[in-house]
Length: 147
Picture (cartoon, rainbow, N blue to C red):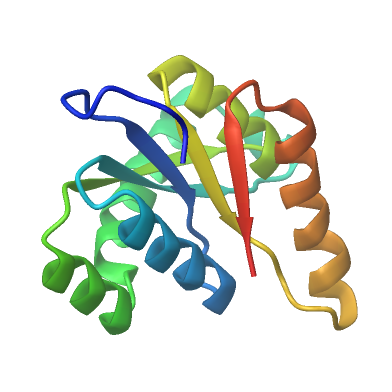
C-alpha cells in the first residue's frame, strides 16, 4: 500500500467491464482501500467511424452508457459495495480502454489503479491481458493487477 497520511483520502480507480476478473479487482480495492474513494470506470470501445459520427451522438451514447453502468453492476458487486459501506462512483469513458483508463486517472488525480488480469485461455487472455499490460506501462501512478 502506498505510504500516505492516514487523514488523506485516496482515489482508487478500478477498471470495470462486468467480468469476473473485474469483480475480483473491485473486491481487492475494497479490502485494501476501505476508507478511500473507489471509482469504477467503464470504457466503451467504439470504432473510429462511430467517433466521427458527431459529437451530439457521442454525448448521447455516453449518457446512456453511464445510466446503464449503474444498472449493470452485478448483484454480487452491489452486495459487496453495500456490505463494505465504501464511497464509490461510476464513470464511463469512450475510446481505447488502456488509453482512456490512464487519461482518466491522470485527469482525476487518481492515486492507484486496480485492474483485473484475465484468464489464461483464448482470445480474452490476449486482448484483455494486453489492456492490463498497457495500463501498467503507461500509468504514472501505482497499478495493481489482480488475478
